[in-house]
Image (cartoon, rainbow, N blue to C red):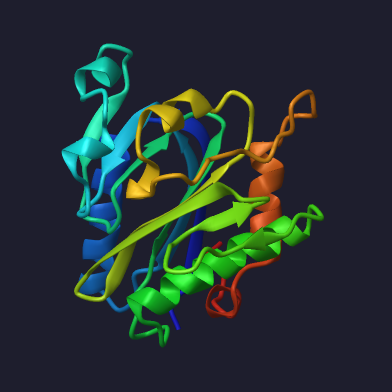
Amino acid sequence: MRPLRVIIEPGPRGYGEVLAEQKARVAAILSSAGAPYVLHFLQHRPVLTLGRAFKEDHLPQGRGVFQRRGVEIVAVERGGSVTYHGPGQLVGYLHLHLHECGLSLRGLMRALEQWVMDFLELRGLHGTRSEGLTGVWVDGAKVSAIGIAASRFVSFHGFSLNLNSDLDLKIFSEIVPCGIVGKPVSRLQKPGGAPESFERAVSDLLAVLPPFLARLPREN
């Protein structure tokens, strides 16, 4: 059984360098039976990522308006369309061999949704799925996006969880998030409420790890 390496970086970090790290971890898992699985929590500098289902009309204002504001735009291999990452949002990347863990790609996405919903229960919040869509909603607004890819059955990319008021929700209103029309995006911090701590959010996520991760030995 491979160990699980947990990396925690409040950041924020640039998207391109982290994507290169993800691909290196995938290669390591594929090349060595002793390479650990990796769970990486971080925050990104402002970036729009464009998944395989992206269409140009999912950026109604075009790309230039975001680039002029310093928002990076990167095409990626994951499923789904466009989403935004930035400060105030926790991102979790997960690298494991699906077959070794008895998972399908769809099964992993459902497990990540359940993980986020279990996390929300710790805060007295009721997270829900939306029929035919991927992600987690609270009171009708999306708080967690999930997008996964796999290379020879090793997963990369992951999920995002909207935490604080410094997350620029205006950007979500200027795009078609995940290519879904008419579904608002929100964050956990309430107007005037106390900020959600990145470190506390990570701690709580680790407290409710899904079974396929909880059973793995933790790398020292």
